[in-house]
Image (cartoon, rainbow, N blue to C red; front, side, top):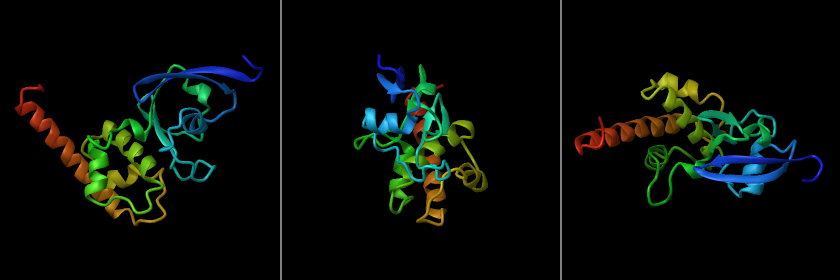
Length: 171
């Protein structure tokens, strides 16, 4: 191993990944440059905008503030890990159906912040949704469509759980 390099092994979107990285490489650059997961955006380089938000061990983090080596042995979920074109995650579906984006640059970070919010609080009020989005800046919208998209996603999640119970798949 080269001097200054460290081996990092991380489970990313359910898949084990490893690489040698510079000890000071940021997680956002590891995801984008090494793993080619470009849904995680670099917005401000100052940790203010939240466009780079991912889940690290289930918690929303700004990946521009975390070193790749700090994720060693951890679980990372990026927007690519939420769903796909054939089967959107309810949050993605909510944003699609309720027009929760304009330019889309901040959207991956917003979605990941919402995943974390809904893990902690599955039925937030509008105020709690807005509070949960405080770490992600959207320069295009007034946030109302984003909030509507989150509220719709909450309904979709509840509907899916209800259908699962009725089909005998839940408790």
